[in-house]
Amino acid sequence: MPIKPPQRPRVSAATGRPSGEGPGRAPARPSSAMGPRPGARPEPVANALAADRPTALYLSCASGVEELLADEVRRILGEGPIVIASRGGVEVQAAAHLHTAEECRAALIDHTLRLNLESRLAQRVLWRVATRVYRHEDDIYALGRQVNWSDWITPRHTLRVDVTSRRSHLRSLNFAGLRIKDAVCDDLRERTGERPSVDTRHPDLGLVLYMDDLDAVLYVDTSGEALFKRGWREDTGEAPLKETLAAAMLAAAGWHGRPEDGPLLDPCCGAGTIPIEAAQITCNIAPGIQRRFAFERLLPFRGAQAAWGLLKQAARARECPPRVPIYAGDVAFRMTDFATRNAERAGVRHAIDFKTADALQRPVPCERGLLMFNPPYGERIDTKGSARNAYGQRAEQGGDDAGGWRDDDNEGIARPGVRTAREAFQEDESAATFFQRLSSHWKKQYTGWTAWILSPDMKLPSAMRLKESRRVVIFNGPIECRLFRFDLVAGSNKPRAGDAAET
Image (cartoon, rainbow, N blue to C red; front, side, top):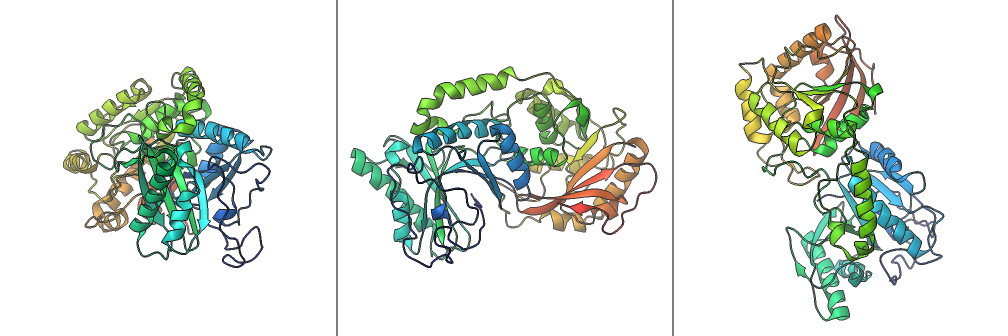
């Protein structure tokens, strides 16, 4: 499970020397991994080595979503906590006015509850428990021994260690994971006389070890299953568009389900991820309200059960009828039915108007609105009838929006033997024809609407003969995509070089 903590210059905040220079790079073993020592909490320094930074949360996200996630975290937590966006995620520290370990620990527990329940964009909420500059495997074992693991679990709990690295010089990442597992087991055996067991499928304590060329950072995974698993999708083994990516598309478009944002239409909805996410947004449904989290089994959160119950109760109380209409559909009856059943499980069937229709022929449902479109790139797209088989194959092979890759968890691992979406799209002449016909239909029927299309093809505006007004870089797993915005007007609107700014 790749985790990408903040990238930073190799300069120590404590000494001012380049990293690796000067003595005492490894921190002293704290009395508890749940928070910093009283009076020793430094101000947040973005350029610090991992060993110099205070205890904090780290929220991983898809590349390109970091600033959107930082804004979301501030909306959820308010202005008190320190929120630092970085490559691949966002770091959250307790408010600067909190100085004692107990105050910081209580604040981070509260933040953990709220972020797991409310974040639509984060992939996981990780609690940083130990950091160390390392040179060999013994340093990794010492990293694991910095933590009093009896604060987190008992010997009756199970654990799993995942390892990810960027330029690590260790020969075996698996052995590094075993050293962390040994450290946890040895610590608990010394304290209790017993050791926990390993469970690679459903552990009580999930640990994530991240290593770059100098730093090793150990996290507790408070989420358990990745946060895109909202709790309503049937586990079919398919790889549809992730809910977190659908939410990122909506956030990048500035659509928050308010009356001023206008209605939303997904004309090629597949399994319904985008309209379901949009419906939950406009109905004020918390994304994590239907699922369980790993922190519910961990010792530090046992005292927060009452607070957790109140948070969920408040989330349910704020749910409301849809504030704007949501329209969706697909060319295949099977996919529309599949999306409808998903919407029922998500509790938003009443908020979505599903209709089986060809995107090239679907009439406009209202005067103004927003089109959100993640096309099935990499597959044959044509008019209704001749495309029916192609759309049926999409339903059988990957649910909605399967862009030529498979992702078993949340960070996107390209599977061998499968063409990437970019390659498949560029080779597919029928796709180019489809988009030309689609833009012609939109200019005739959807004048005044705004369309957002996620695509790995940088030449999509030229193919559609439209001028994009904005481009947003978002990664769909390992695939670098652009979310293009088109302001639809009647007649020809050919793109000109440099017209749109990219963010």
